[in-house]
Amino acid sequence: MDQLPDIVPIERRSLHDDLVASLRQLIARGVLAPGSKLNEKDLCASFNVSRTPLREAIRALAAEGLVVVTPHRGASVATVSEDQILESFVVMGALEGLAGELAAPRISEPQLAAIRADHAAMLDCRAAGDLDGYYAHNRRIHDAIFEAADNATLNSTRQLIFTRIVNLRFIARIGEDEWATAIAEHEEMLVALAERDGAKLGAVLRRHLDSKRRQVAHWLSRQPLPDQDP
Image (cartoon, rainbow, N blue to C red; front, side):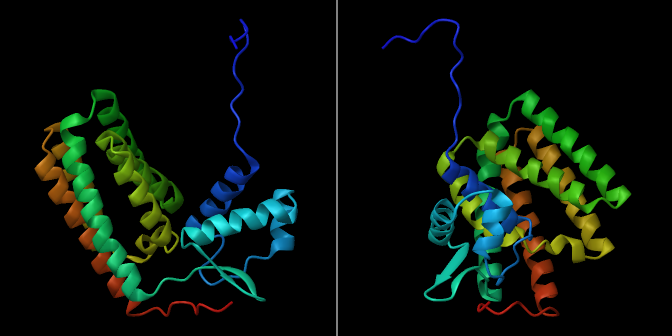
């Protein structure tokens, strides 16, 4: 059937997709904390949905490993052990390094300009003590590198691991010297991107994630993780 003239196609997203994305974001932001029980009544009221689509969304997140469903006890946000967290940073470092190697030779001038703008905004947020803003621009930089890498499989693998660890927000607990290291590493990323040097960018990103892994290990040595059971 031919498309009728002067009609703009309507973009649709299913209720299921919207619920899965919203719940995933709540977990990533830490609003739904690791180990916390998912109260179906409250969530249905908040989203204005019935229990059937909510339960389908919960099952989808359980398949991703973000939610644990226990018979007769309901669903809760999955917790991650210390070993799993640190292992995740090792894998993330490898993925980020590969993304850097692919992205640097391919990145366009508009993409690079956007990363520079996010870097400047990130520094402004840091100076103002706006941690949420800092996180937002920081993530946009890393997302942009993966976008420039132009590898869908690499990006989807990264997203699964990233959601598992981002809700912990360890960077809020690091010291001033560690802040300086993180920002200096981001500035090295900009140089490598401008030079279109994939090997250099890959090395910087691997070192950047290893710095974060060591910061997390130090924080974990002083903070207990929540129990798995709600």
